[in-house]
Amino acid sequence: MAISFPQSTQVIRSDRLIPTALAATIAAVLIVGWGLWGWFSRIPLVSLCSEARVTADGMVTARCAVAVDAGTTVEILTPGASAPPVVAVVTRIADRFTMDLAEGLIEVAPSDGSRLAPGTAIGVRVVTGTISPLAYLMSGGVVQQPTATSAPAP
Image (cartoon, rainbow, N blue to C red; front, side):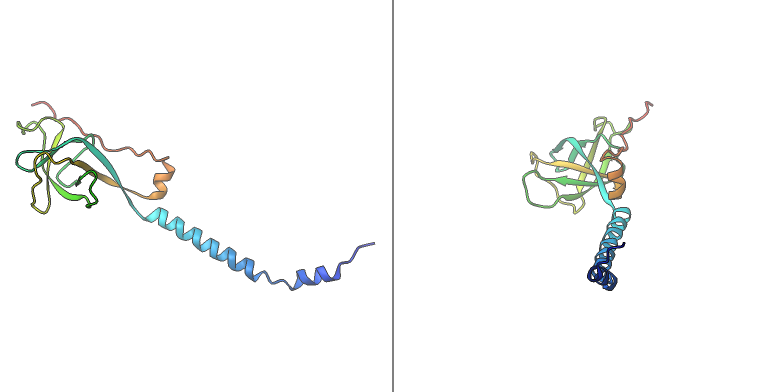
């Protein structure tokens, strides 16, 4: 003999699941939106240069472990200051034709034409490219950077 629960079965039949369906739809929209952001947005890949210093003429030289050319985005950082980074342009790259710049060094200057005071504590940051946040997570946070190549001997 089957046991009947008329009140329970009536409540189950009358439930339209509107709150549950609404919550599931909102969750799905949020997850899809987050996935689209992770796929299509871009974050910069940066590399810090070592041995950054201001020269007597207000230019900045730094040794960079990544490949740098004239079109590379370079920023000058002032440690401990709340000022934003200063966008800089690459003025010279050490190669076999540049005799007064040591191998592996680059020379940059602020893009606004200003000069820095010699002896100022600075850092140099090079933007080597961009990557989507999803690709960055899938790589485990390890991204191959383009390395600097030595100039061929003459």
